[in-house]
Every structure is written in structure tokens, then in C-alpha cells.
Length: 353
Ligand SMILES: NC(=O)CC[C@H](N)C(=O)O
Image (cartoon, rainbow, N blue to C red; front, side, top):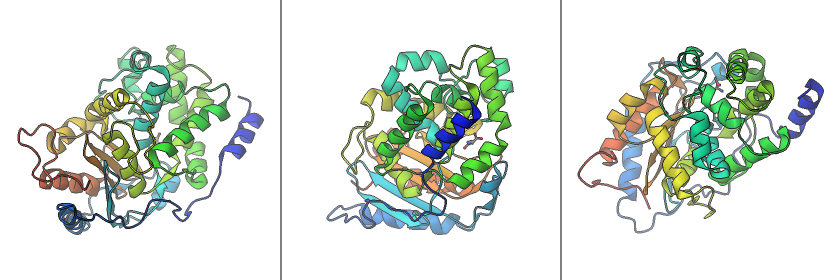
């Protein structure tokens, strides 16, 4: 759309600045009543936090300039069970931009709206084996976006969001992600402006997709909406609710609202398992044994289907763009709680229910 119109749309769409206090109707302390394992889960989360808080490997992402200002010491963990019970440790209420974790949920929402057949055909579900913002991956695959968890596939997915105008397409995405979180999510305008000023590469990927006939709509507008979705503010606690919604077959366990169908959840978890941590997805599945999704601001979500969702936040990243402490804490908790989906023995522990 023309620049002036786009600015107007932006003005309508932007609702908040950064460092907003978390206003959530989620109870801070959810009573776990007589649940036998709840205290053990909390103790293991505390152990993971204490054990890995001193890990100083990796670096805070700064290719989006405002992300570079994040405090590398931040470290939070949250778990929400499929019955809505929550446990949190460390900086679990710190707000940060969701970044690539949004890709999993937008994929689910678009599959729900259009049907998985159409989205599967348009996007694909195979790992590229290349970095999330690779242009080469497109060129090597005949211009196909390959999967919804890398930037090319995420842009192509966002382009499929239903709506007559950019404003209604954005409303579809924002409302859908908010339904997953159980509260109205708001944009971090500082992160948005910072990425919008620097996202020439994503614009180039969108244009390249267009040139191959794989991107409906205006590539610049699509990139703008994608950048807004990446700038939505969440906490680890929000992400655990969003992850628990996928674990619960599409019903948000806190609000009780169905967000997407069970089949869409299964599709989303399958794609996360093969591509959620980019080119490190194989190692992730090998060690953690559950679908996950990471983002460059430092969040990682992990889903234990039928049990609950785990979210970690810590901004130092490895070379692929995945949180270093988040990966270690998740590996630890997966083992300690017996959550690996490929294990033949039933889990020795389960998540708080
Ligand atoms: N891996 C990520 O979290 C990348 C998201 C970021 N907004 C980008 O497009 O580069």
C-alpha cells in the first residue's frame, strides 16, 4: 500500500510503547492444591534456573539494533499445564518481543482459517538446513519458502492471513496470538521501529518470493505485518500459556477458549519438531525429544503434548539464534521430568495439572 496509507495503518495498529508493566489476568500464584508433583516440578525448575544462570556462552542478537540493549543476565522459566496450572521461576514476567516464536502460532491460525492442505502446498514442511534468514535456501529450492519457521516461509504464511485490508489482516494475527496468550498482546514500538528500519533482507526475501510467484500481496506490506507480529510483547509466562494451548489440542487452558482445532495443533507441532530451532532442529529433537520454537530475542517454547507447555527466556544466543541457557534448561527439564516423546517408558513425572 502507499506510504501515507501504511503510516496511517501503523498509527492505528500500534498500541503501546516498551517496558509496559505486564497486565495479565493470569493469577501470579496458582494454587496447585493436592497435586503431588507440583512442588517437585517447581523445585526442578529452580534447579535448572540456578544451574544454568551462570552460563555466559553466546551473544545477545543485535542485527535488530534495539534487541542489542537486552540485559544478558535475564533468565526466566515458566510451565503451564493443560489444566491451566502455572509455575514460574526467575524473570518469567519480563516482557520481550516474541520474534520468531510468533511463526508457529501464525502458521496454526492460517491453517485453521484456510485448511492445512492449502497451507502445506503453499509453504512446505521440510527443514532447509540453513539459517533462518537464508536467501540461498530459496534459490536452492526453486523459490519455495520450504517451511513456516524460517523467514521466507513465515513471510509467505503471513501473506496468507485472511482480510480485505492490511488493518484487518493484522487484526487477524494480533487477535489470534492474543487468544493463544489469553490476554491482549501489544506491540513494542521501539523494537518494531528498529526492525522496520533495518529489515531490508526480509523485504528482499519477500520480493524474491514474489518473483517466484510464491507470495500473494504486496511484499513490503507483508514484511511490515510480519515485523509487527515479531514485535508483540510477551513474557515467558505468556509463552508457556501459548505453548500449553498447543499441548491442549488448541484450547487455551487458562481461558478455556478454543483457539485452533486439534488437527491444526498436530500439524503445527510436527513442523516445530522438524524446523523449530532452524538448522539445529535435529540436535534439539535428539536431546529434548519434543517440538520447540525459538526466537532471536531469547525465548524458546517447548510442548509436551497432552501435558503442558514450557517457556524459557534468556537473551544470549548460539550461532543459529537459539537461547543458550534456554536450551540447557529445557534439556535438563525434559530429562528430569521424563518428557521425551520418543522414550518407551512412561514419564516418571508429569507437568503440574
Ligand atoms: N529468528 C528470529 O527470531 C527472527 C525474527 C526477526 N524478526 C527476523 O525476521 O529476522
